[in-house]
Length: 144
Image (tube, rainbow, N blue to C red; front, top):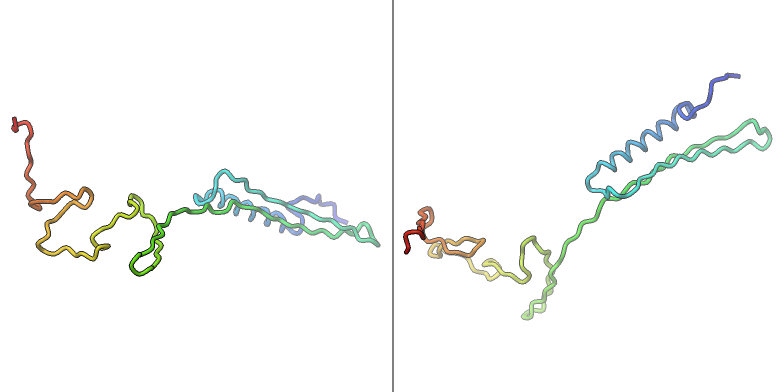
């Protein structure tokens, strides 16, 4: 009979400790994942079950289970426009784009294409650019 002290690290030839170490790694990775809720708890559960043999109570069957719970990835949100074309009854669904105004149209929605004679304009302000490349600065101090 050997007199080595039984520890968690030596049980099952070290397999239980390895399972706990793997669970710790998974939990640490989940904590560092920016796509998970950092406020949620993570858990590691070690369950060791011992069942003595009915005929020889000194003989004990042991099983060990390691389980863990992680924080799920956070969800994402968006908004849709739902629209019905009154001419043909076609229903369409479109996703909002950041900065877009509901129902706002652009030239491509109207089927218009800019030709060579159309003046250039600033898409952000709608201001027509008179002389592209030649900016004329107006000095308001001289306009008295």
